[in-house]
Image 1 (cartoon, protein in one colour):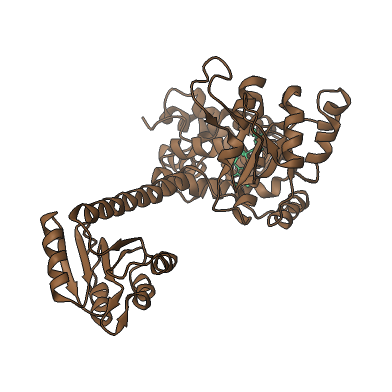
Image 2 (image 1 turned 45 degrees about the vertical axis):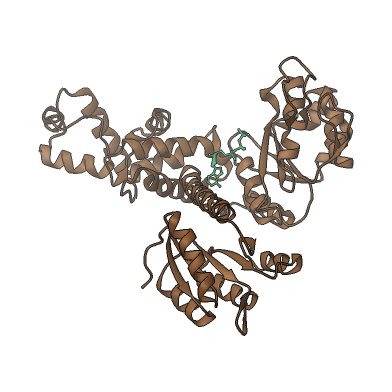
Length: 456
Ligand SMILES: Nc1ncnc2c1ncn2[C@@H]1O[C@H](COP(=O)(O)OP(=O)(O)OP(=O)(O)O)[C@@H](O)[C@H]1O
């Protein structure tokens, strides 16, 4: 079994004993632990036994070549920083080693300072790599993974179009009410495109004045307006190689519309206050919950820009028209928030399920997400009950639950118990009114997940 990674343990691979000694003296004086090996077999054996922060590899190892060993080392110890060392420094071998995955290149003879600088850089990169991995994990815990399965034809169609164009460079315009998942789907398309490992940058069109939005988008040069104290990169440049997502495009100020059109058509733009024309390599996606055709008719949105944007249209249906998807979405969100809060939740009570089903969800998936988050926090577990959900959901069902109405006996019983408990001073009193004993009331309330009154 391998030892735990030790940030100070280094491997020196050199066939000359005297050079290994020189390395050892210099590295040990810097506080490192050194393991010396002389050939490829010993190297691979050492890598199988121990983890190293970095390895120094001589390009000439007697009859063996360091460049041949390098790929095997990287296979044996993924992410290892291999620093190539050679007296026969040549630009070609350096480039070849770096291409093969070497971390750095050190020509012999080197000074202790050169050694230290290379190792400092290696430690810095290792620290940053770990930080990025930690942050990615944290972000993963903050954002639920998108539920991309659907039982509703309108959503199926939207997803099909979206994923058909994912690999292309086509401009995509997402339409649909607020909270239907336009941003989520744009991100999912980006993640499936060849730009996936480049940035996804969002611009909220309504949040800034025309002047600030222009600077936010295209950047500005120092002195171009009061407060512009240094040259600043815009989001178009920040998204270089990736995707620029223009949210609420219907709110793009008229003054900026021709500039965006030029960006779409020619990929060209200038920073505010600059004369230099720059070119952008970005894929554009945009979203709107407005009736853009009406905006065009009213003269608020340029027709040519509308047609340029509307190449591929993906319309996300409101949640009230895709009720069959509510259970899967709700379960996915419950699992996400359970993981986030560390609670062992298994699902919903039948009454909570009925409430989720009956509610029209005017705020769409965003409202569903918030409702489930609330339920996850409020339930003592393992089920989310109806009363852990926001009041508007309960009201919607309560309004439906009437004697003689289209409700099940279970729903009627649960509602009757809830109202009696609400009006009683204690659970004993409620049980008496209901004609059952308190333990039966306790069991029934536990089943329906009604926590509105504590046991007295
Ligand atoms: N299919 C889905 N699976 C999981 N979560 C989803 C899904 N669709 C939307 N959400 C969640 O719902 C919330 C709203 O989604 P999103 O921001 O994409 O909506 P939007 O249409 O862009 O809203 P707005 O128009 O207000 O910007 C987000 O928290 C998102 O994570």
